[in-house]
Length: 352
Image 1 (cartoon, rainbow, N blue to C red):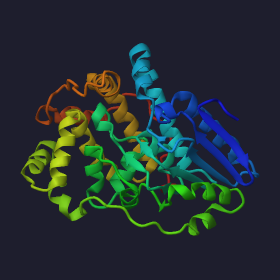
Image 2: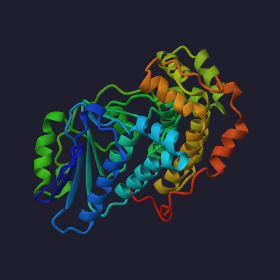
Image 3: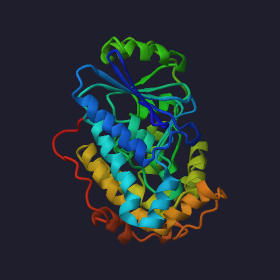
């Protein structure tokens, strides 16, 4: 089956879903989300399919996230419910993948960001390669880490997940493994062999047989960043970065200077709130409410304009700095429902 953007095939024991929208770095639109969901529903009770693989036809990207420009257009034309619908579908798909009764394998080869993490980061076997670039860069366009990304970030060692959430920092394969975004590393030249093995061998046995790969450079030690990232609020955190002499602190400060001030403050609060939530479903519900609030703010349309449409990288954020962000407005985002809930199970232990 092929709809031009997704190739779906069944070979031996393996059902394979291949993203094939290379010009858009496999950005997910509504049709793609619906096709993946329908495929997973069909294969759930199909005895001939024992393992599901999600991969990409392009070596450049697994999936760069949702189609944000299309979301901006839906929001401007049809309002909040329409603008939020792709997020709703994406989050429900992430929950489906996390609880899928059959082994699902993802090849996060190349770029995997935002909604791409939602697609590949919650399955049973998550493989990254030496070409992998993983990130949750939402604060740059006035959103907040979502698609279950804040769940993974809130469970990362120490405060490393908070750092990645605020900066949108990019992870290589080793960093992704350390942060809990992936389970195994494989060289890109071995992916065809792994695909072939999955057609006739149980996924667990294939994963256990993968040869080790040499580690790549990691990020700063969690103890090194703790004195900065345990700040009580964003103004204090930025002051700590400004006073720090390490190269990573200067890089972090530069990244946050470019990000949306309101999103930074909300992301800090959401990270700490997610740490106390019991499972992925609860975190997805929180993310959806936060995104609904952010879609209503002018910063989202402005961020998309500056980063993705005009590409002048000069957004006019409102407010312009974190000191001017209202704590009451941040609290309202966390506690007031802007959209109806996702309707996930939100019961029982985490299903991953």
